[in-house]
Image (tube, rainbow, N blue to C red):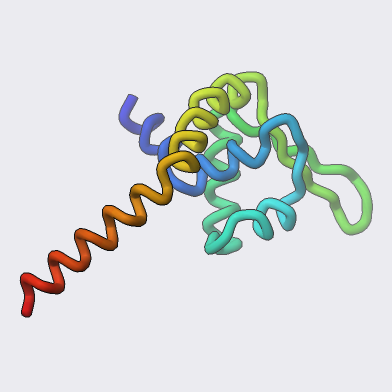
Length: 112
């Protein structure tokens, strides 16, 4: 169980699953949308999600090959849970930023 939670709860997996909600995306589109992810990390994340049955990878036989990713039915059920987390984060991001600033100010004052 821990391995599954570690996989689906890591930041890159969460972002990939959120982006693939009801749409198919190519690798380059995912990379462009996910700020800070390296090509290698995105590749590893997509492979792991595919192995777990959460993402489907489709290779179209054209030159150059076109590869698309989409959520599987299982991945779509996980998206509902992730969407709740994303919504909560969006609603409370300002409060969290304020709390971080207050904490940093207290730490800086204590270090002086």
